[in-house]
Length: 238
Image (cartoon, rainbow, N blue to C red; front, side, top):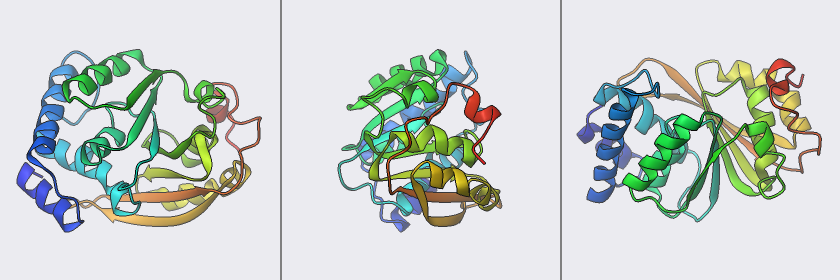
């Protein structure tokens, strides 16, 4: 997907990019490739692949959730900034918080945020389990997001404690999203969530499928969640 087809594909979904936003995506790509030579941020560095599998893929969330209103987003395990920073470029009014356990990635993101002149972006070098137990962050966000971080039963324990009641957790998963959703049904319910929508996505020019699972927060998460770091992954809620 080159820049022209990227723009056209987004316009078909009602997203029109300004020249400034296009410049920000170009700069994002250049910084990603340069920093990737020093640290492992992504296995995908070809320009057309980055535009498709990172930028466009991140923005598919906006096809199923309305980001036109001001809202707070927390992105768990964002890695090189996906999906939250492409969304921030397209919807500048969003307030974005990124949580990642690797400090080198946070350093890259800090540089990127400054280079792209993005405001209202907050970066935290912390484990998600610890972050979700801090009173100032617990049930404080309109939207929690995660892309390809962990299986959904684990991911739900990391994300749902951060979401306000009547907020939403958007899980961006691979081809096994339906299987993971069934596996996570009990965990989602225990954590205060309810699956509202499940969409299957095929990226342009690609055969692979993606899943977009929208989980609404219908009641507070019990105080014991999230558990201590490492426990959700070792002993997922069944």
